[in-house]
Length: 102
Image (tube, rainbow, N blue to C red; front, side):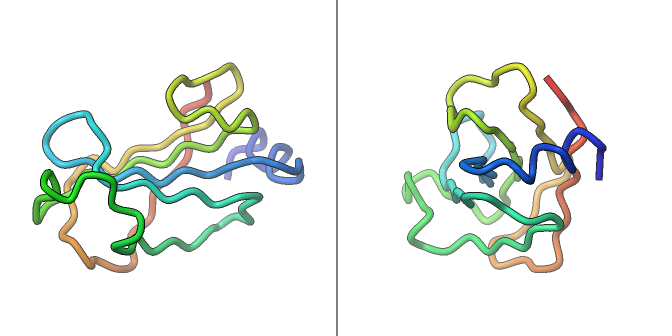
């Protein structure tokens, strides 16, 4: 875990967003975890789906950790990570490494 992440995880009101995208760039499912504790487990469910018509069998996952709560725009100090290969729906044991600091 990056040192910057260790410092930020102690702050209250931080949010970890887990985004699932089909082939495009628009998220089809989003889960938000308030004040996460790392390593943080996650499980996307049907209640996280925003656009059911766009969900495909393969999803691209991204995680974004922010203390501002702004999902639409990354801000200075936000930390993110992307899973480069697509995963199947209902996959388990997936790790997304937060390594990119804005």
